[in-house]
Image (cartoon, rainbow over all chains, first blue to last red; front, side, top):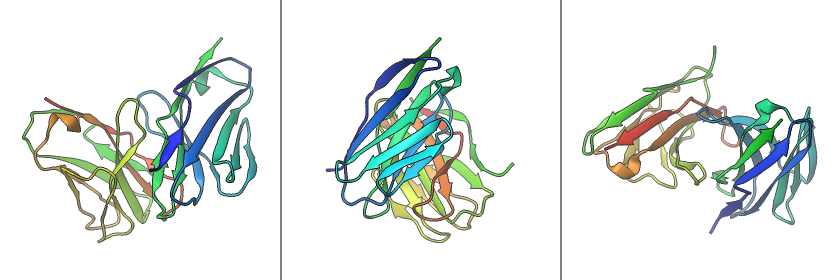
Length: 109
Length: 112
């Protein structure tokens, strides 16, 4: 079966760096997405990786290793507004998105 | 402001009743999707439409139906609601299959 694993919850301190991991087993691979979802709101797109390596976008970076079935989202200079759930999703060979359950990130002052 | 509008925002529905969740987008996106989100689970695809006039079944289609008569609208109908359909429903769109999704603000549905 297809599976996406990410930690349920993480806690970090304002101003620090946090890495949220995502491992996947899917039928084929056509890219990996990260979304941010604040409580009670809709998910919003953060990043997309289809080739191995690091994609940097401001304070957020996303890394992909296809051979290991592994990605991480790196958040730098954490701010209180970064408190949210972070969703990892993989597009399989049929271009269907398989979603992880999300990682709830709690930022403490 | 361009985006996706879902209605209603929330609804309490008696079991056995019929309900249509509305979704309209003004971005002229080709692909549209309906997901449900339940605590502790990832988003699960109910139905999708790659382009106007076509629809397809997702991971959890039973008890739901959709139509795509035009580019902008993609309503989701529960023919006879059951308590297990209590969930938050998100409509999403993308300009093409494989592009990032834009989500509506969701409909919180409680079936009693």
